Image 1 (spheres, rainbow, N blue to C red):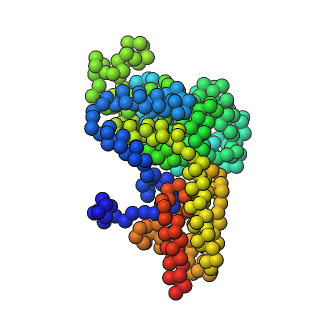
Image 2: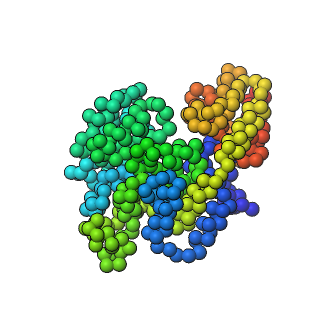
Image 3: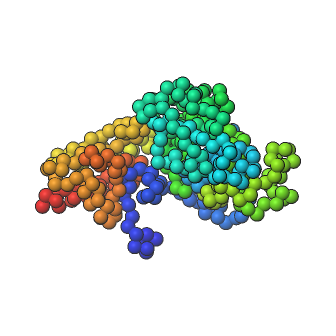
Length: 396
């Protein structure tokens, strides 16, 4: 009997993609094996993060990188690095930023729930532009002696200023640029794209398309900023005489070790670091064209299975409605014919065992969306069968 059955927890057929609330991704056997292997030995986390930095740098083209406890943690650490730099007194003060450069400038088009992660570090958000356009002069005029960084949300296509323009303007004034690319894989090329376009720090999720541990993320970019983020993760049992980073004091890079840092709550375990870098190495070799074809086949199985069902219209959409290179099934529910709203159907799918989870953000317009990345063999047929049961039960 599985752990979930023993606990009385229903499992999920996941049509939401790599969503945290339904468990993210499923890890490869190689990743699980490495995590188990890592659990059998002790290691200095500084040494393991340094090794991880090499793997991340090789995969992304960054100067350095680190494993974080998720992409949101990576954004908080990125903000902390830009706020404090290598000034340990500033590290000790965060999230108190009184008297510091503490503004992070964001195009209004790029505001989203996850930019709270920047404010957790003590940053103040300064919006620029309008909700339909940002002009270059608006960003340039917004940068001041209070600006610690500019934030850029990846995946917005041509909405707002492109990253190349943002980085050119920011760097002209000596301001670093943070990119949130948490969910912007695939395509795999995006691992390198944003750094190549001038970003100073980029955050990725480790538990989405990379298929590492769900609780991990990647922060990669300029070496001094990554070092600042690393230093703000360390524990409080630090003595200058034995500190692994004591050479930085001797070299004049730091005046001394910081105390227990803002990033301490975002620490990654040795097993998670080992799992993430293994998944990242495997990611370089995966046949993503074959994956895409499998995704398309599974979406088509859902669309074909729901043909000629009265009250719904199902469409195979590619790329996704958000522009990602991922197919999706959009199911339009006619409430007059079915007696059900899209919300009713979503709730009914969640009442079964197993739960069927779908993407809900278009439900207000009557649409369910099913993504294929986390569907397993036989899941499309189970989804079709359950939808038929839900619709026929209401008619009956």
